[in-house]
Image (cartoon, protein in one colour):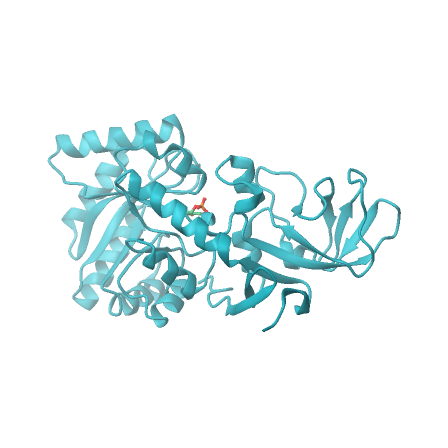
Amino acid sequence: MTKVYDLDTPSVTIDLDRLEKNIKRVQEMVSAKGMKNRPHIKTHKIPDIAKMQLAAGASGLTCQKLSETEVFVDAGLTDDILITFDIVGEKKTEHLMRLADRVNKLTVVADNETVVRGLSEAGVRHGKDVPILIECDVGFGRNGVQSPEAALSLARLAMNLPRVKFEGVMAFPTVGEKAVSFLSGALELFKAEGIPVPVVSGGGTPALLSLGDFPMVTEHRPGTYVFNDVMMVHSGIATWDDCALTVRATVVSLPTGDRGIIDAGSKALTREQYYVKNFGKVVEYPGAVVNNMSEEHGMIDFSGSETRPKVGDVINIIPNHCCVCINMHDKVFGIRGEDVEIEWPVAARGKLT
Ligand SMILES: Cc1ncc(COP(=O)(O)O)c(C=O)c1O
């Protein structure tokens, strides 16, 4: 069996014990609140991991893009998928309808009239209903209708158009006061109008910490929890020991007493930062920081570390954001201890359309 130290660098390894533990833990957290778990596969882009999530009790999957969804459908994951992205234009609605023919239930979100009308026209062309959720901007400042009233009026439009089937509302991330008041306000409005809202879809891994604030949510969409990363540790939902994904990199130079250079730069780790500093956590040297990078070089400042590696040593970096990191790699290696148990192609990497 291949050993982890036989792997070339840079390479991505997944600690399978941690992966399995993360899947089980979050399934239990979501189930304990009486919610369905609909994990977002954009984190891993690997059908086998989606199968593990479903085997652990997930009720369905979330995908972000059509071509990404297609990879999972091709792998036989055809039961229940939600696409959390506005599908705009006939080229894409045709793609959606081809996928809908292969999936038992394929739902999409919409946050504007153009999208809802386009979905209706596609449904009419194909003689098939398109289930939709109205996306609400509950504080993130990305897409989503801007008020409960706007959610109601878009739902009304959907209900008056042929072949779109209003099924509920969706939001990301479901955290904070504003999200609570937006969703409860919307549900009150719908109730007053006598419109049933069977699905209230919430999401986010840090949002798992406050599931209790959202009793109205019927399903939750966590993504990053399968691997975790620097951002998840920073948010308090994970510890370093819950981080399953690391980038193995070789120290190729130590140009000064404090500076080390590794063979993993922005093309292996990405420059993603969001709300954290630096570019990744060095597992073996807790006081060291990946403080800069170019495409193929990572610069590590060892001044805060009592010890130093040698040129040729291999070290592990936990990336800031595992979801974008994995999209940079053709394959990942599932490891248990020193053994490489499995090699997974990142099947949906680069599937952005
Ligand atoms: C629409 C949507 N739902 C769910 C998620 C999963 O969130 P997280 O990666 O925090 O678990 C994301 C992540 O980007 C998302 O965009």
